[in-house]
Image (cartoon, rainbow, N blue to C red; front, side, top):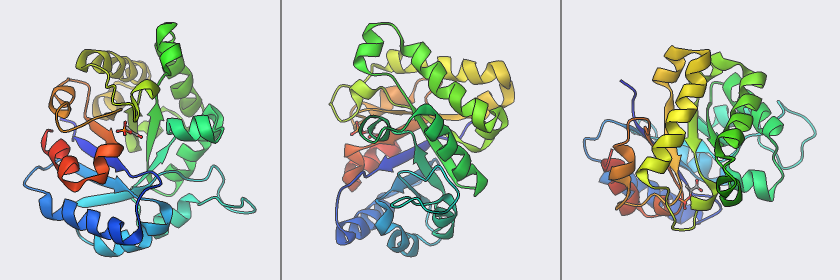
Length: 248
Ligand code: PEP
């Protein structure tokens, strides 16, 4: 049985005070759900979040990680720095990083490997744009995004990683993929991994991301290949985030 996981991606939002109160409210709202849960605050808040969450069921991670180990890379944050701050996860290849900051499949693959090398679990985001979907290129895009990471890090690395399927057209738009549309791609991703290693595919957590809200989470999470969610906007509100988590 795969464990379920819900991850909140706070993006560039909030203040130190709001970050601290958000984690406090999430922790106090958590009931008996046994699934995994994490938040990814902005880098600068990670030390405080680490302090507030010592021993809590709520884990945390970063929204990105450098594609190099260390050195003259102004503005970047290395995987060893994230490890030092006790990050469990690092999101890599989010579509906003790919489209606004020019991250390529190759640089995402290098970030994925850097995270793994420090024992930080990469949450690899993949997904197609609306144009690519309309041109029936969804599976080809997913293949290219996955293959770059498999070539760089090897299939065995997926035993220590999470994949998030995030159709770009559903992120922050209020348009969610239907349960069936999401399941179709999740199943495809699992099959692509299974072609290389069935056990890794069976155990791999594949999250859905794209306008998940308390009212659509249950249907998505009930799909056989959807193991939870990567949540943007709704993760900034403790009540909504906990409701989504409790839909697992
Ligand atoms: C995201 O940015 O990863 C995301 C899924 O955002 P939203 O939930 O706001 O669509």
